[in-house]
Length: 302
Image (tube, rainbow, N blue to C red; front, side, top):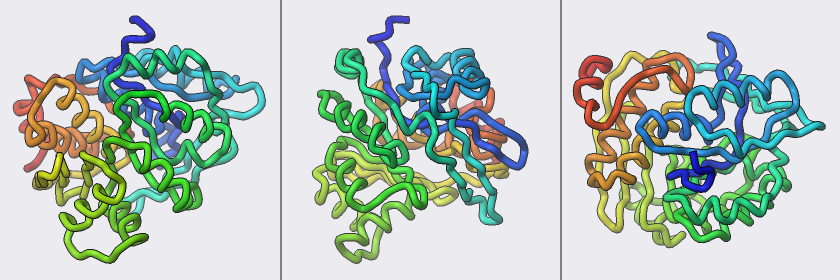
């Protein structure tokens, strides 16, 4: 694979999710990259692991899954990231994110410039900005011309209003959940409907596209002033870890293939729902866009 020819570049954390069912490789950026490549979209991840067996195993696992791991960095001082995930009764997840770890110290590389200039989307989140080293690298990346997707992904104790505002100001496309939309718009104005909050939010930050996930209630997509709603799916949830990442990957994969906004949202909703029926963020499955309907009908209870 040409290192400068990936359709999507993801930046941020790679880690072990310690779940009740056991340890699973994860981290939002690599989860998104994994589900993108399952849709035939090449994706690379800029991240950092320790020079420990956990880091070596993460690199091996995701390389075997088809993710371009050639941009993984290795840290001799800090260990590979771990997150202890507690599944709550309402299918939400509570996270204990260990710090400092290797992905807090992602270093700048001059080769990042041509990497991003040759990609369709650059995906970043808020968690990797909790430490100044990775944050400063991210801010330099955000100055490179390309389409920037901010996967808001707020985690308690790992963000401030000022840093989120800074990252929002760099984005072209936002993905968040309903709680995150409520929180961020509440910093500025009290609004009742999701549509009003989305329109205000996108106007406040000069954003043309934003999508809000609502779990079993579906999703809402603000697309150049149009509001598109997608109903939720009734599924037997095993855990929701990584379902939002699968949703984002499904949406981007369809937009890259020039699907309509409605079709892209429908597919993203289905893929996110499917992952919620599986254990862990990166389950094995075989599905391409042309097989979506048959696959979903056989795997989801609608």
